Length: 517
Image 1 (cartoon, rainbow, N blue to C red):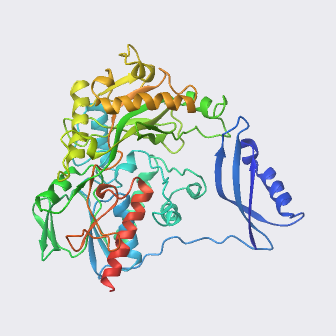
Image 2 (tube, rainbow, N blue to C red; image 1 turned 90 degrees about the vertical axis):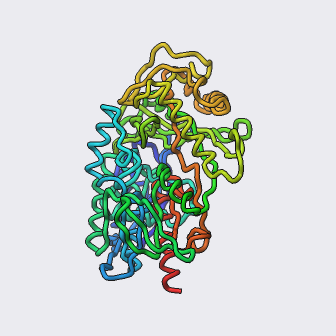
């Protein structure tokens, strides 16, 4: 039979198989019994100086053996009903995989390059400040998460089947630990191979994945999708189109607007990316203990209310690197990533302020681009302040709070480089003011956080889309255009790899229901 057992142990004990076996024997009264045990869930409790590991195990007794689970079962869909999927990020790829499960044939169109070809463009961006608007950290196979971290954590348990999404990652090559750890993480160094395996499965099942194919037009007939145009010349007829283009595909918003397809401004977040040494964060979070063979590099999650608005950490990367994520000339954007081992000496996180469209200058309800234009203006201002390259304006954290220009920096992992600027002078005042107050509050929660060991890099501006593409919550279609399925981050309905993947699957389920009455 299978039993589940839970208990707490020290970090050292959690790595000791003999100890864990004896503890399970004690908990379940299994003296002299032959049994197998496997991790089910694992998390760290560091609220007190005596750090504990919360353990949950599946225990197989009475000759019961753990069977090898098959998480994904494809079928041949080559001659089946075809659906178009625009974008090969997590939403697009998981939509395609789920379509195959349901007997639909996915035809994926990705504006960027395949996952390996993207690397050359990322190298040019980092070393030479050359931005390829179609191939960068945001655009290309695998989407933004492939080369900017690969965290698999979502706060919302209502979005859908999180376990299924994690199981599919394991099926295509991820370590099984992602199904165990409280905050699962694959790592930028491992994700590309997993993405390739997903693509190969889609093709093997009869679907298609087309690269360097950018959506440039949509034909609508009788309030329904008739066809799409790629690269201004390739026209394909489809009745069902999943729009999974990501939060940085601003040209898609413009295309929809010109076609008079309704859009709406939505709240988003904007701020900075802060980098501490990992040692500082470890000491704070582990009560003075540095991470070792028994504890991973420490992370944090912070939130505060300032002037009635949220100030919070976003995409925290232990042992990580800050990356340039601009998608066009004339702007700078930061993001962070970590390798699978999270073994870099730095720790970084976005610290952002909630921005409501209604509080922006010249707000009108009928302008869907009010928040997008504000986002653009901040990215341009930071680009100009740092010398009109991919260098970013930077300031030591304590200096920022005290509104002093930093004379020197402890370090920065941002490869294009940083320029000393008082960020209070280039960030909008309501953003800077809330950040200053938020950092003071964070230091009360994590003593030692507010230090000039920490360096702010600006801006962190692509946490989510500032534009929402409306859709019906039941049919998942745009209320005015039958067959158009706005999906995931780019449409304003997700906020990370897992939530985007789940949203992609939900869109396919909606298509399947519509086809089957």
